[in-house]
View: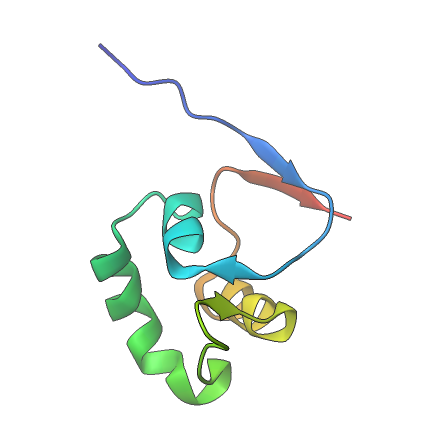
Length: 73
């Protein structure tokens, strides 16, 4: 059975955990970490469990927008 893809709209960029971001990119946290590895100098270190708004923007620039995200206002 085919799973329906949920399409969402981000109204505002906020702090996200690695798990939340990996779910947006429809991958595991381990794979997502590998995707981020080449961009660590651009993204920087997390603040506790969360990536800051600036870091989330850098992740979106480095990896592109997640395919299930329609619009950011």
